[in-house]
Image 1 (cartoon, rainbow, N blue to C red):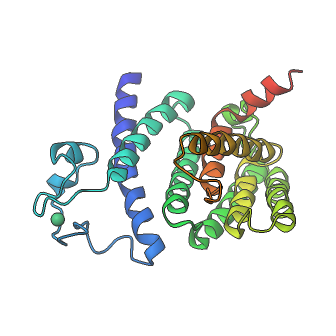
Image 2: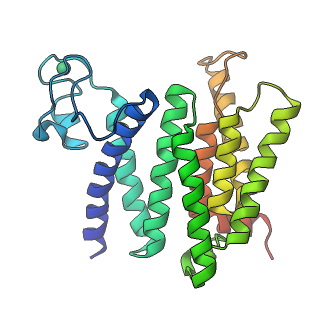
Length: 263
Ligand SMILES: [Zn+2]
């Protein structure tokens, strides 16, 4: 039976990844997400449903437009495949539960923010502010109705309005202070993103998320410098590392804290 769910969630994830691609392409340009329908960015020909099947169509068309043979960005394929694998992982990790729905939604949010920051160097308010309100509302509902999310509690992630609000303030403060003292390091986008992660993951997990982001970011920056893919003066955005670290924290935050501070 688990095979059925893995395959189903893989397929759903591929479609969701396809949608994330559209949002990441259109939202920074201020375009509508629903219209016009998918079209080739070179020849503007509309892409038929048959050529718009996530993952498969890219392979079938060998990464090129059917009509003008211009290259389809590889990112479209990797995001579809990555989200498909992630969704299969989520159903395996959480089982069929409401945690699964909530964490899947947050993952979509972080993947979208990661892509937009990587490609455009911005963290759009249009996504961050509504997400903050949503995260606080979910934490508020969790407090009122006393959700007992077994899995999430097991991982150190509680849905409680105080945790959420304190987490947001700590996330904001942890990035605001270095931004004030070392000019040019951190942008407002990163600070708002850290606050959002705080509202979602709550206290104390927000501290772990930022700590992980610094470590992953440092490692990747070191590797890029060593391979001479980036120079010392190139800016490497911090937002994508925050988004990636937030997802890792949502999945394994409690386990990592138990490892670091065995009781
Ligand atoms: Zn074309």
